[in-house]
Amino acid sequence: MSTEPVRRSLTSGLAGPGTLIRVRGRKVVGGVTEGAALVTRDTISGWGGVNPMNGTIIETRHELRGISFKDKVLVCPGAKGSSGWSAMFHTCRLAGTAPKAVLFNEMTTKIALGCVVMRVPSMTDFDRNPLELIETGDWVKVDADNGVVEIRKAAVAASSAS
Amino acid sequence: MKLTDEEKAMLDGHRGKAHQKAMELLVRYGEALGCERFVDTDNVAGVPGTSNVFLENHYKQPGDRYDVIYSLFDLDSDEVIEVPRISVNSCHLQGGVDPENWQTLGMRPEQLRISQAGEASAQSLGIKILKTCTPYLAGNVPKKGDHCAWMESSAVVYCNSVLGARTNTEGRESTSAAMITGKIPDWGFHRDDYRFATHRIDVQVPLESLMDWGMLGYFVGEVMGERIPVITGRHSQPDLIRHKHFGAAAASSGGVEMYHILGVTPEAPSLEAALGPNRKPQLIPYGKAEQRRTYETLNARGKDPNVDYVMLGCPHAALEQIAEICRLLEGKKIHSSVRLWVFTSRAVRAVSDQLGYSKVIREAGGVVITDTCSAIGQALPPNTKVAALDSAKQTHYLPAIMGIQAWFGSTADCINAALTGKWNGVAP
Image (tube, rainbow over all chains, first blue to last red; front, side, top):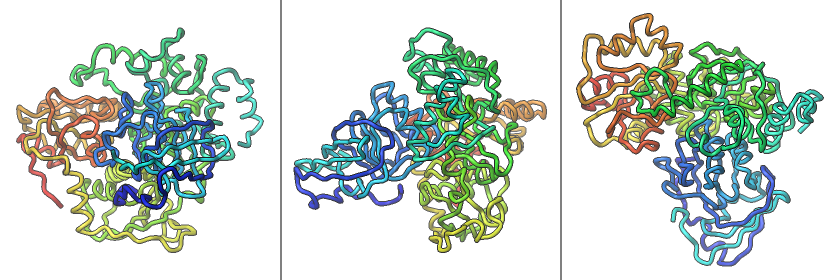
């Protein structure tokens, strides 16, 4: 929830550089991809919360304000706000600014439809909380078809807002 | 998903390409949700086939422009299909351009042309052009228990909470597919067990004004996220407008799609009825400190007391609100450095015109505008730096989208700013 204090380096020290972590979850949208993680503990608004022309978060008090999710593996609690969520992320796909994959905890119609029309591998219902295992900068392989996420911890833990 | 014979026939193409492509999208969506079946709907509210300059430039495929946009964007199809006549009861929500005031809004002729072409196509297919975020104030009022497929978070929360009808927050693609098929995933708010409250918000301050209810809504959205609250305590009986502002705010700061108010909303005749199996709800107090903090949060983007823009009508103003604005403005002139725009539906403006309300606002120097708002239309008066707003929802969105300062207060605070050019809002 958005009022929760931001804990940027929750997992620092728990898993050292290069450690490989494997998490299982449920396919939302199929496909296989890999990329650098962008992690946020704030839910994301679509319409009025992102600029689809460059893929940046614009919501006033969002911890990722000004940061782009383009080509990242986006890890977040879920979606909130306007029903324009799917159309906004759909537009991101058309503009070439969509994330490479989406991993989230809370299922809503907004994020389900948004992931469908972004056509990127997407997963939820994990056996362990990805927000507590993945930090911004970690290298993440998403195999949504088989319900597996592999996390390679980054050499130097990065702040989630850097 | 488990499909009925009728749904299988659509998916297999026996009802034609449009039904097939719409069904394919709905099945992808249903599977993403982890949902097993569809429910029939005969009340769909969306923005079917709405185009804009970006989409016009993006989709170069040949064919009827409405079919191209509806197929490739709305149905996320890779081929262009001919959109059939829409037999499901369907309406078009807000759009970007008021055809009467597009120049005031600073829109370009191309934007008007795209909007009007889409509107003509949708209307010819049988879609009711309401052009408002408040369909429930403009002729679309579902009854308790009706399964709907609505977009517009403020209308969704009103539909579930105040009317007792059933809808998730649908998106553009799912509503456009539902308009063709009459089907929507039977998930979430369509199901009894999803509609119970999990948290109790205990109101410990007197709650009277529209501003009071807007602030409570903003607080509730922040603390609840996606969850369902039941409101108890020291509040007055909210009228339609207070419900509208409360729900819109809760759906902006959070993702609230349904709320109960004990003894007020249709599924909360008792605390037990609202909570269902949730016997021990978390209790969250809303007292003076929470109210004060919410007011400060909403006014965090206000610094300069010199207001140059007053925007009212988010969600679109009800007739009673236009009457209230007239009462505050009657016989006065707004300050020369301020613009006053009041947004509403075409239906409410038509009545406002007949009743002389629009004239009162016009003679004071304001404009009554339909179809859109400053956030949806991304339209501000030239050189706007500081806005005054009576909507917590608009205060949440407008500064982020348009990069301006904003003050939040009562309708009277906003009209006062329009008359003086100064913000003198008073904290509760």
